[in-house]
Amino acid sequence: MTVYKFPHNFLWGAATASYQIEGAWNEDGKGESIWDRFSHTPGKVTEGNTGDIACDHYHRYPEDIALMRQLGLKAYRFSIAWARVLPGGRGPINPHGLDFYDRLVDALCAANIEPFLTLYHWDLPQVLQDEGGWENRNTCHAFADYSALMVKRLGDRVKYWTTFNEPSVAAFIGNLTGEHAPGYRDPKIAYQVAHNLMVAHGLAVQAIRGANSNLETGIVLNLWMADPATSSPEDVAAAEAAWERDETLFLDPLFKGHYPTGAYQLAGGNMPKILDGDMALIAQELDFVGINYYSRNVIGVKGKVNTIPGSEYTEMGWEVCAPALRRMLVKINNNYSLPPIYITENGSSFKDEVSADGRIHDPRRLDYLKNHFIQTHLAMQDGVDVRGYMVWSLLDNFEWGHGFSKRFGLTHVDYKTQKRTVKDSGEWYAELIRTNKIGG
Image (cartoon, rainbow, N blue to C red; front, side, top):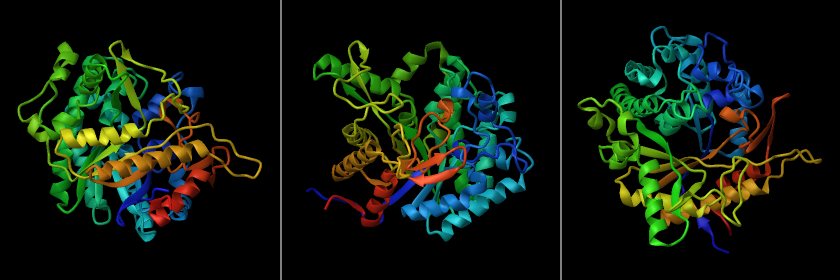
């Protein structure tokens, strides 16, 4: 049996996001976010679910940190609810909100778990949305100020700082397809939001380093490998064109200092307003880049192939294809001069049921994770500098537009009782972290 041994300092962890787990949506002075507004709007979320309570992590974080210790996590990736600390997005600080994150970080440090903090995971304060949201450049400066505030409060204990989680989803699923908050379907707004998110990232990196120059600062991108349907030159060319169109819109400005040529063709008259100096601002040198990976796209000359014969699919309708993660990591490593990489999300949604023995047997998730870990190890052998891995997710949670209908957790949550039960995949993951290897 092949043994895959990871470096002794490899950062094994799990990830969550504020709106998906915290609940307490209007407690202790928290302001309304765009996801509060969106989920409270009839017809936007499956079965009318909201994150009003979610996993009640705001009240149960000590229990959840005990779970992390049980799993042996070395790191915990979480996000700050901007409206919890600045209800108006700027201006008066809500001390109760800052105190919550203080307590959370202190408890993580006491448990010897590295906090891996995301400043923005899609829950913009509604007050700022009412002023134009990310389409309004003023929001970029508000974000930089908020970033500096958080660093001044938590930078003595939090080493890893991420500006944005998946800017492409915030820009296009929120403003082009309308499936996420704020629910717009306007390509011109979507492209301006995409650019402004990058500008805000650059401003925030400067603000973070201005507040504390000793921190590790990065951004998280979601990438889907584009694989050709066949080995024909036509399909290979189509897959490469799809990659250039869909996956380089944020990679290129961050790591090459310009937008890909295809972006100008694709956006056409919807190309955003770009000010002098924006591209240099966006291309700040970073200490790490986070990569979220779930699946791939298979592309032929006729477009995306939706069903691959013989492939397994998750509850999200995403194909399970671990080798594509390795190919994608090698591709970006070859195409860009990247800082160290962390896999900041990877996981799968399957129908989980509590068995008669009270346990949750989830062999498909276990196999999914195992195979993706192995492919990451192989990518590291190929020369890709991967420093850590955050499984999505620590807990079953509010899966955005799908509400509570999709479960990604290493831990099962009974939403009626808030009972947490570690699944078989979680117990297997704990053993992997303990031994730091697969096989043998």
